[in-house]
Length: 147
Image 1 (cartoon, rainbow, N blue to C red):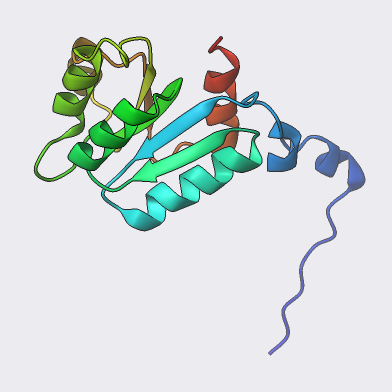
Image 2: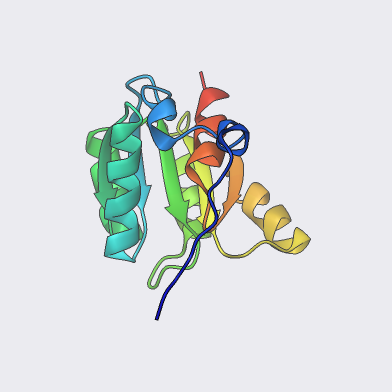
């Protein structure tokens, strides 16, 4: 079997989006917390955000996250919505009700993208809504809007 691949002209390569390395330091040293019951997803996102210049921590459940965030408040939190025991909506409500965490920028990272989902997410106290899988450039764009 022989596989032949066409040579890509150099002009086409120049039009590709910037590499993830181009987003280095976009997080500006912010303390970012990642909450997702999928350990691989949480750890991968925390690692990626670290490569983007953030100081990161991860939790695999809402209760664990709330306890950890209360002792070391982040400036930003990426939160999965569909978690067992306590979902992301309830976690956002509790974060907003905790004075030390009330200023945390909350980003919902979820597969739920209908208009009603977005309305519910924003009503729960989230500042941003990102659909999974959100690419590195979308995350970088959102982080650049956060002061």
